[in-house]
Image (tube, rainbow, N blue to C red; front, side, top):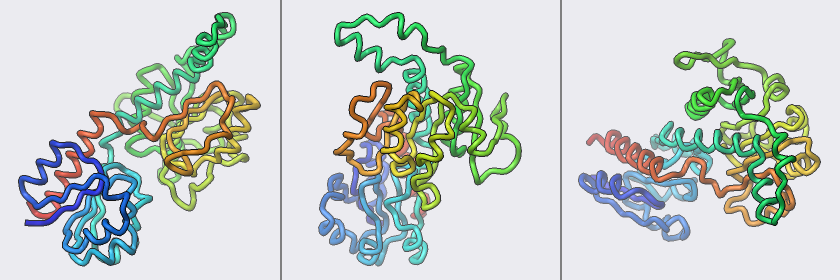
Length: 309
């Protein structure tokens, strides 16, 4: 029987899947207490985390029996992959399990930004009736969505967007060829500059790496089509928030939906003060009841498989 430590929330069904076979130590708030986390690692064979538990050299040194780390999500910024590889520790992310939730957020946010629902709500709540102003906003149908990063999530976004009647284009430095075929339609692959100049809305689906840190800086943001919208459900730090705020305030960029921030929890967002066509959410794009169930069960099953059950 293996011993599994879970330091953040997992669903009850997935927890029972693991407990039926292994000894499980479930402490969903353990990530808050670094010393207690390190002390708990001594006899652990598997560790399951979300994005708040920092799995670094210090934790790994305290884990001589650790074989596998399960990540309840897809981003791996909180896990030191080279240190895990050095110790032959397998890292398993829940690839694709939250793609539907993220894609729903992207399409919903793009509709809301394109139609001006947020500023219309603010004005109406304040007693105004700005019907003429918002009657001039455009339909979502027929617009172009640029998808930056065309992995599993980006492709689900494209499928949902295409069903809304959008034209999808993509950029991904890891892909070659002129297009990617998705069932009954294909998505052209362009350079980043070409994508930005053509897109009415741009959605980011990139990992946070040295190459993507502040990728969407002032220079890149200024390559976007005048009045286009930006949606970031990927990782904070990919977008220069100050540069984005300046362009939203000036109208150079028509709107934005930001679900991830350079510092989380995001405590100081004063640079976005007074900007109307803006959605700010607390890293929830990929987190729904359904995606939590899928993510948790996927990792429980994968951990069982890896441990030879």
